[in-house]
Image (cartoon, rainbow, N blue to C red; front, side):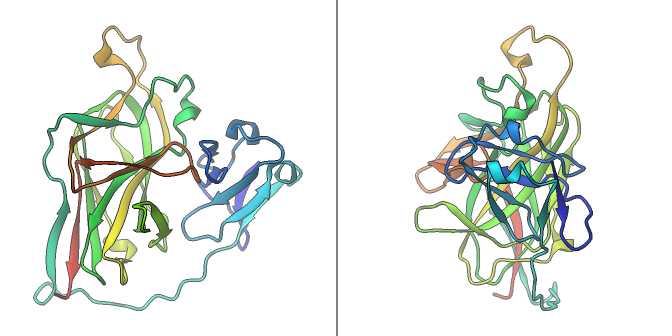
Length: 267
């Protein structure tokens, strides 16, 4: 099964596939291919196939299996050109710049017996921003990685009244890779993507797992077990958001993740 652009018929790399409100789903590969059986869905379940920059499609699994391809129509975007002038716009770092803390967020869980189990897992932070700000870049700290070939999608969304990520604020798909066994701050340049928060005063900045394999070798201690760790600290005023699969229900924890963004705003 392949996900393709309805206009060009080219593959849509790493499209997300999920069952609304449930931890079932997967992510297509670089050629837009995925196995419906890998989603864990039942024939009567409805699947949502989506990717930033495209209109989502909702299909029962039984109907999806009858299709040779899933066509996604490009999302129409009306973009205005805005020039950010260093002399008049203020830049701020928003988020957590500390690299320690008493807890960590791990993109790998004990239940992940297959690499496909992590596909579509997503975690991040809710950040307060000035309305009409541009997000120029994002930084996330990785304290330990026992994976290679790791690829993430960076998402920026509005936040609803329940502290759950809602509508995407992106017009283009933002993906980035992490060096094998990487440690330290990872930088994602967002200036080419023209990311504007509009009227939002809060945004959810999250990372969605698209690909990665455990580093070869049998673990000898607990430190060697497959993991990609982002440090964090308990906080009464900050929120970590995460879900296990695309379209899964969001979960919220009072945790401050080592993730920050640089914003530029006119005030």
